[in-house]
Structure formats: structure tokens, C-alpha cells
Image (cartoon, rainbow, N blue to C red; front, side, top):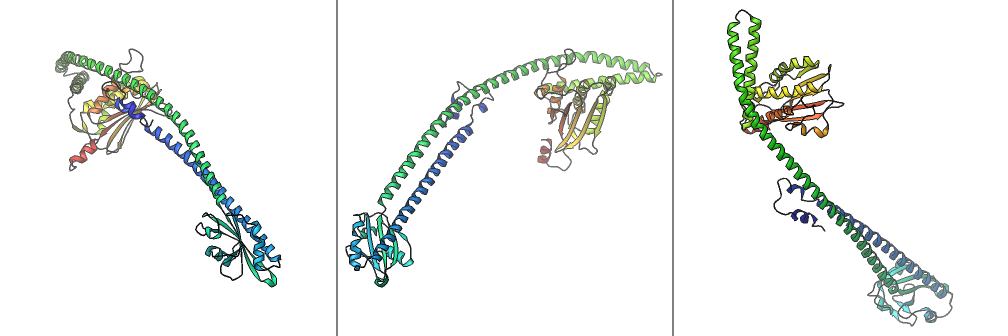
Length: 475
């Protein structure tokens, strides 16, 4: 189940369209996190069971040691109350011994070795050392247990010291094998292991079901993502095709405009020659000629962009671009009764580009802001320094653009204006102009209302800068 991503990625028929390969890689992090959670649960349960088993084992061993200590003390009391000889005293304790299970030993204080109830002397360094230290119990290692006639398993010895009065002081030892305790510990560990295996089986069984469900979700998400990618690709192709057709149409229209525009310019020049005495009329004719020349330049620049030509790279002052755009749209704002404010930082770095095209881009932003504003509203055009270049922003206080329309607003023919009031080309043209100047155009809603349209352009390379530094500035 961990290979779900590979399965999803390879279960496609034929070559994948562009953009779909990034959607079929799956999400292995889900499986890794789920598997990690299962391992952690099993590890936590195993640790808890192990800790509980060890705790019970230590408690049982301590209880066994306490029993042996109590037995040794009871035997010591019996030993001290007897008036028989040492051998007879030990022989009287033979009845409580169990073959290969419990052995009773004694010695006079200071003697070497321990005597059994049958009179045999046994040496045990571990027990003798514990008696010398005054311990009440000691664990006898398995290699010393056979010396007491016990199985080669760990044993526990209860130790007691008794003063028999005139008979002297004695050490009494009761040694019992821990075989039964070891067997109980063995089965306790087996039960713990069985518990861990059971828990692990349950966890991985439910985890497997969860991973299977995740696999189904991933397949479904992949199909939905592919379908969305196909729809987006189709929409992009449709828009590109429509833009290509409209671009061809626009080139044709621009070509047709050239003829009447030439006629207007020629007639204006003829009128200018006949108006030597009327300066006001002559000024109007000169304005016609200037705007006619401007139309020719803008149309020529746009046709160049449509053909893929690079714009001219004149060094421009951002303040002059803003001032020119404001001058061209001032009458429109006055007619709409919308205040146009200018906020331009001093000593802005220069930019490279076509002045007419950049002015046209800013004009489009200003006209859109004017149309979005209500009478007595306010629009501000700002120019400021940003990292690597200059930003020219137009801010209005209109209804604002919705987040869903931010990206689409820059597409050709998209408009929220009523039919007949807008064609959806202004922002698209502005975006192409800015992109041809290695810049970016971004739209964003303002709080509490309104829209902010910002053009970012790289600064022009200063004299003395290296080529790499200039490229960084343009980026």
C-alpha cells in the first residue's frame, strides 16, 4: 500500500498533456504519517506492557525474598530455643526442607562454610559475604545453586543472625530455588509478547483499512485534478485562440485606421497654414496633430507587441510617465467628478522602455479606476521605490474587485462592466505592455473597499554596473 503513488502515477493511458504530470505524483506524506502513527502506537503499547511486566517481576521477586527472610528468622528463633547440640538442632530442621527446592543451613558466627542438616559443609562466597555484611537476603547465582543441592537456576537465600545465649551466636540460612518464579516470569513475558502481537495486528489491520481508504481518496483526487487541468487547458487554448484571432483582427483594424488618421493629419496641417491670425484655433489644430501622432505611435507599438517585437529601450523617468498619464486622463476625471491625486517619491530610479506604451498602460489603469469610482470619489496614483525597481500603483475607492476575479481580470475580453460599456481589453493590453518591459502587473482588493492595480518595473542599469548586476535589476 505504500506504493500507491507509483500506481497512480503510472495508471495513465498514453502521454499526459502538459501540466498533468505535476498532478499525478500522489501524496506519500499521508501514508508515511499514517504508518508512523501506527508504529508509534504499537511501540507505546509494547513499552507499556514491558514496563508493567518488569514491575510485576520485580515485585514478585521482592515478595519471594521477603518470604525467605521471614523463614530464616523463624528458623533462627527455633534454633536459638533448642538446647540440643548443633548437629541435633540442624537435624531438627530437616523436616521443613524440600528436595531440590528448599535447603536450610547454619553455622556458628565466624566459621568458614555453612553446614547442612545432614552435616555437610557448603561453601558459598556470595552467601558468606552477605552474612558478613549483615544482609537479610541475597540472590544466589545459578552457578552456585548446585552446591546447595538445588537446580542450576537462580536461587534466593534468606539470612538471619541469632544469639543462642551460652551456646553462642549462629547464622541461619534458608536457600530456595527461584525456578518457579522464573517459570512464572517466563510465561508472563510470553503473555506480554502475545499482547504486543495482538495489539500490533489490530493496529495494522485498522491502519491497512485506513490506507486503503486513503488510496481511494488519492485516486479520486487525481481524477478530479486531471479533469480540472483538462478544463483549464481547454479554457487556455480557447482564450489563446480567441486572442490570436482578435490580434489578427486588431492588426487589420490598426492598418485601416492608418488611412483616415493620415487624412486627419493632412487636413489639420492644411488648416494650420490658413490660421496664422487665430492663435486659439491654431493651438487646437496643433493639439489635433499631436494626438494624431500619439495615436500612430501607440498603434505602432501595440502592433509591434502583437508581432513579438521588443519595445524601445529609452531611459525614462517614472515621474514623467505618471505626469503624462495624468495629463491625458485629467479631463475624464473632471467630467466624472472624481478627484485624481498624485503621490510620487522624489529621486526615483529610471526605467527602460517605450514612453508611449508605458503611458498607455498607466492610462488604462487610471481610466478603469475612474469608471469604478462614484462621483465625489477619489483615485490616487503613486510611484515609489521598491526592491530592484519602481512601482506605479493606482488605488481607487470603488466597489473593489472580488478575489475570484483577480486573476481573470487580466485576461482578454473579461469585464464586469455592463454590455456596451467595456470590452475587457484595457487591463489585458496593459499586462502585455508591462510584461514586454520585464515587469509585472498585479491587482488586489483594498480594505475596506476599492482596488489596487500596481505596475512593477525593473530599474535601468546605471553606468558602471556589470552585466550580471543589470540583469538582476531587470529581474
